Image (cartoon, rainbow, N blue to C red; front, side, top):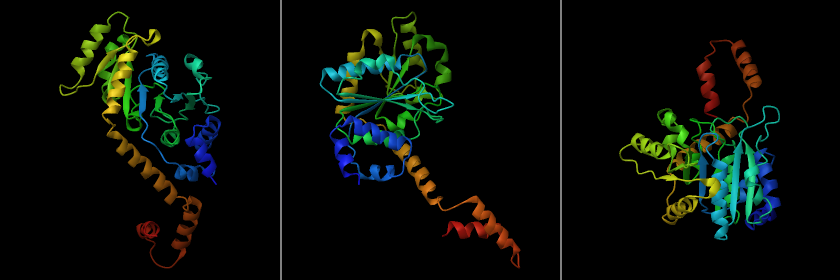
Length: 297
């Protein structure tokens, strides 16, 4: 059923890719069979996260420019806040990246968090895998920018960039409990602002002594420092660097999906009826024996 679609995805047919992402995003019947039919490739996945206003979209735009200069095909997933009414993406226009929408080698898709607390779409793993089965050379995932809880990206991306600005200096201690701990690279964007060097020094002092996390300064709007960042990313991928958190995230995802499938044939109303009938029978009803009988099926 899916053979033609899978081949078209593999060849980079954008319309087919977009339709299939919509199928996955909305969990349309058959999407699981589609995912079982694809073959994922080892494509670098770069996560870009950080607080709102840090310049994540501008940095992503600049990294696309670097990749296009090397004739790469780039897929970008921009995860935006959800509308409380439609659950759609509120920033789906992506004005800062609009110049790429008619470039055949760049594919940009806005996704809504749909209430997910980790700053990502609940089907982000599946959508990323679909893109990894296509002919892209790089995948960028920009998270919504919600603060400390935005750590899920570290288990999906091979390399996670945490983007900060000099004004975040007073918040370093608070951020350490969340997104500060997931960075493979820190980018201090808008580094032409006052206090940038002081902020970099404070950031280094607040990192663990054994940490060797690079701290890079950029002015993404002017493309300053972006080439050096892109070069560092390439060196990571050339050396086969991967996030070790990915295995934990995938295990949690597998646990959730398997649990959901095993629960498909359980319904509270049916359980209520069975309990009521069992309690009418002569003898003592043991609730825990009843539970065990369901688990051991």
